[in-house]
Length: 237
Image (tube, rainbow, N blue to C red; front, side, top):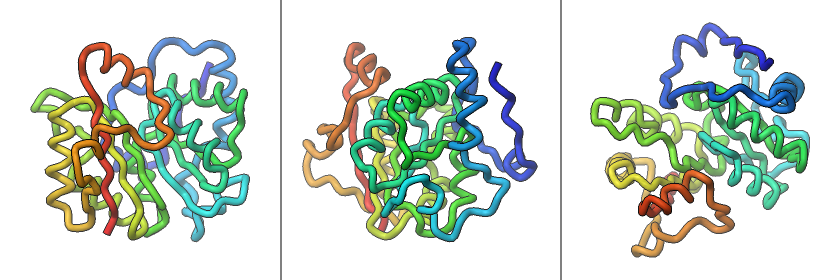
């Protein structure tokens, strides 16, 4: 049985809960064991102060650090960490079943350039030092489709201010979604933010998946239901 997540007092007070449930079906024995055995070493402890140089978090030497928020099944994050061994990756995923799935993948193909965080991404963003990230990815986040829930969408003025603080000038913020209202929402919020610029020059730029994009199960489901993804890239000024 996987342990309950213990909360540092400050983390509990500031959580904003942009995600829904954190638990799903009962984990298989291997998954539960991996959460117990691997997360203490791979997980980030926000009770400790952040390092002055974020690259020191990783077991392998890296030249830069990227963040993926809400990695889901981990298809993209695991692949990217393998494609770019000279880059350190931090993956955030509060859904325990998805984290367990990533740990199973890492048992088969370890990544020394990967660290994990299993709680609200805003807690991590507030912990990170300024201008430490070379890129941030937010792919297919919960769209919170009902208007009364839009305040729970991850893209908003507060989180964009957090991202601007921790991203280096020139770093890319990449956002993908198949929900048109969320895509429009994101474009409006980023258009109005002084620290970001949309990179697109033509329609193909937001209809073409990113380089090396493996696709995800959620994306495949969206395609079966007739929804196409939009792949947006914004540059930190």
